[in-house]
Image 1 (cartoon, helix red, strand yellow):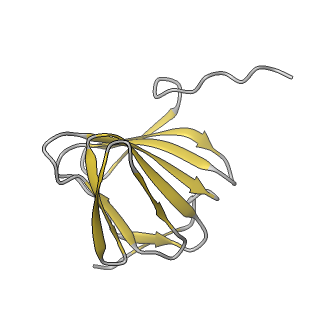
Image 2: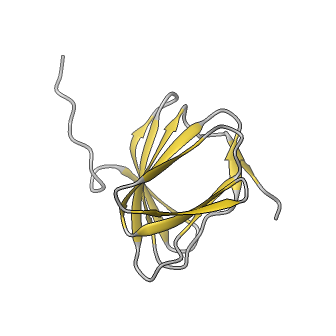
Amino acid sequence: MTQPAPISRETAEHYRWGNDCDGWHLVKDDTLSVIEEFVPPGSAEIRHYHEKAQQFFYILSGEVMMEVEGRSTLIPAGSGIRVRPGARHQISNPSSVAARFLVISQPTTQGDRIQENR
């Protein structure tokens, strides 16, 4: 059995989203997704939900505002929040510094994202 290679932002698949936000797929398969994301000050994603996937957002640096089903919570570095399937949510960075966090999804959110119309 071969030794797995370390994964980092330098070796992971990169993508851009939103307003100057970045993501790196650290683990990407049908049953599990681990993404590191970077969100500059003032940026936010579009409110959405997932029918099947549950997610855990763990803040590495900075802080984010997570709105889940109409309730907003400020999440500082070193903390996280679980979002269950079907829960409408939106993450934003209201602070003056960039935020970096992990998004762990099980199963993957590929094809399982339903955006809100508002």
